Image (cartoon, rainbow, N blue to C red):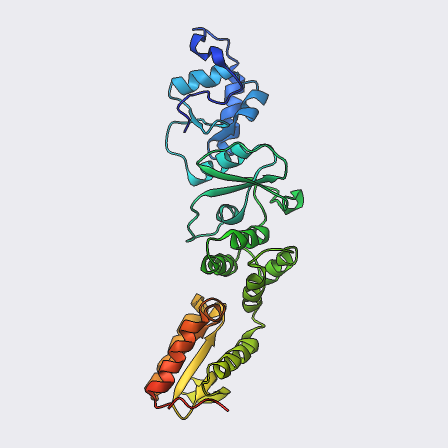
Length: 331
């Protein structure tokens, strides 16, 4: 919040000598408050002045503690704490006429839950003026396009665009995978929509990883994951397991992804879908059934295969050795 109640208002240096009586247009204030009500209590200075509210009226309402400034481009028409949505509007107004929420902030505005957004990201077109602020992360992007914006509500990118960009801008590969999978799991976007948006990305260090993750989300990579694991096991000198072994319990028949019968070790390869609520119960029942039959069950998420393969393969090797594997290299 700005310390100066009219900071950045366009050079109102005479604010200290404001006359005691200023002609007011009550209707302009009513219109401003009504518009702010549609924007979580926030209105931009550009909007205020377009409605006929003067700079003196803004100053008077701020000094009278009826309003409060948010940055140097927005005004909140009440003195209470801002809702999260109010911060989104203020961030966009701080960015300028063509600014929009982007990345994880845009996903949050579209309904993403349980994902922490450290700083509100705002995108503006290449060449646009950037008003620097420690509160909001405002950046130019060559990828800005009017066609990528949601037509209603706070200006923001469409969920598929926002999810891909959030993954590209994430602090780590793990965070990139998390935001993509959560956006799909919570129904904001489909894997195929993500794949379509990814085709637009020509250059980025994380591009290939995201393609692999989206393929996992689509569900077409399960057999590919099993083949990847088999090849990696050979490279590490570990025995190659049987794949898709048929087993049966009281609930019916099912297939084991990887099974070493000699050492009674099972490795289940989990796509990203396995972490979702509708799959958790079935997976747990199957794992419990195997444990009761005397098998050791390890789980290898495809995400783990993408991000931390050495640690998971070390656990597989440890499981084999504990069961009696003598270390002879696979043929």
